Image: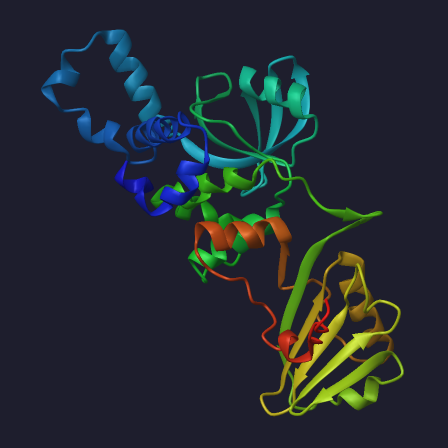
Length: 308
């Protein structure tokens, strides 16, 4: 249980049986993962005297190592069988899981699951807690990983992190039942990018953006898109030549890129960071970090009136 000590606040908020189940899952993972303890135990006397059936099983697990994965349901060829897509690798696999069948019956749609899976010779099966994540998206998982290791540049970098220490990722189940937030058709998700441009002139875009100056900072709020729910805006530090683009919806961010493109200023179309409000709260709770993608925003916040 020492592995869970740093997450004591999370563990105490969850059902009492959750922590022992996690430790059981983690023990099985360490045993049957790639180059796990099962390989080291092969020459142990107590292993050598096991039955042939048990030894065959052990050898099979070593050849087919267990792994943690984030995955989503593609379709359901049988009541308890699912074609799954591995979010981290893009691969598909067949999974037998009565537990997932029960979860979907109770919850309906689920964005993804966090599972420990092992191969039985015909399909994959789960072991331990089935973490359903209703309102966490793949971009959230990558962003969370980057708060642990800034060198995690893509989802395919995560299996190595999960192999080394899955506990932070296990804790995400704390927010697994919080749904995504929408305003009409727009999902509320923080889009953000940062660029270096020593030639950027905020005044050049005054026709499309509302400019606010607090030297050396400029805020460029996109007209018609700068208010709720999109909050599409840019911030420029004229001494550091730092340009930050932010929006609270995908459409808001796309509109910023499109507006600049019409003015012959071309930026990469995809945001560098994309994270939901739920994940931002989970990062603070689990990793004890504040998510600050735009340090200039507070400079332009209006103080609350005294009678508010």
